Image 1 (cartoon, rainbow, N blue to C red):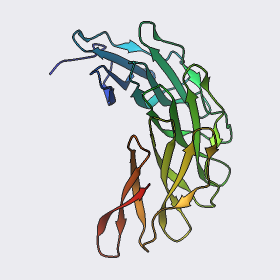
Image 2: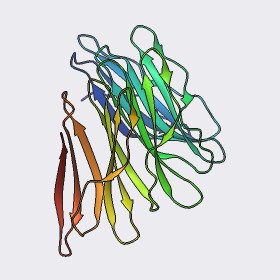
Image 3: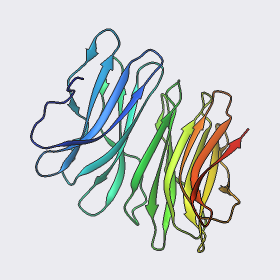
Length: 251
């Protein structure tokens, strides 16, 4: 075991890890400086080892928490996190380019009605990526997404569901062609359901749809996608006596 951060001002928490087929990796975490939480990263290079831990955001208006990270086939990486601006939480990102290093953190969610939380991130081998998160309006939590196109940058944040109930805990996966699938938990006023929406490269997001039909409440979905686009979602669901594990496949 090896220590990969040496800032001993405060505890370092919630590490997240991504590795590519060449064995190069990126780790991100949040760490307090005694005033606020900051986002740090360290890179592992095959044949060389770990580098030095590096601060990848410098906005001192408020704490930055719960980062996620993804890495492409060339070793370029993206990180996303939630950061407070003194009024609310926003979703920010930073990109690591092999041979250049980290860039400047930037905002990728621009809806200012409510704070944004729980970002999740997926990247394809070419470096195209999709980020999703939850963000409230005046009535409920909604699911938002933003797409990163390699060589172009981030687009505009987009609402990907319009149901009346609270939506939470989004997850996302992306295939080598840049098509993505997002899943989340959403209330219909009676129970918690699992919904999904698909992003098709060149077309955009479709319509959110229910992917479970049993009567019990369902929670905390996860999603994964194979190179051909076949997608599997799993979650746990109550049957009135116990929780069970369910799955659904999109071909």
